[in-house]
Image (cartoon, rainbow, N blue to C red; front, side):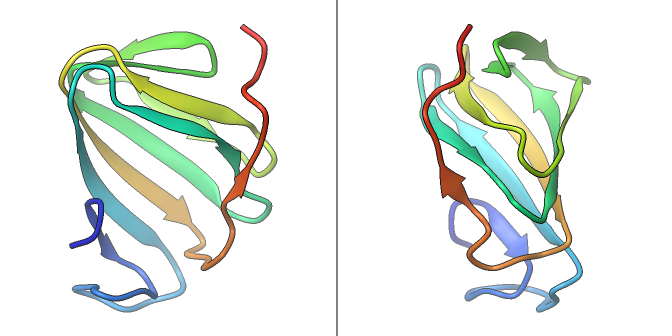
Length: 103
């Protein structure tokens, strides 16, 4: 699977649907994803293990972070981290890069 994504309307996918996108993503300490937002989808991130920074806040295993449409955040793995990510609805081409939010 590509970058951990395994459910959604993309290739490869174990289950093709526009209803939802699901990924299990693994990060090494220091991995970074640029600030972005979605215009349509809500993105739910569950920190399964490790620690990460989103929305200027540190999150740890068991925390759930919800990014509503229009919310801008970047992502930094503060240690080796595993996340489960769900985007509702599944929406191709709904990722927009933005300036990093002020901290």
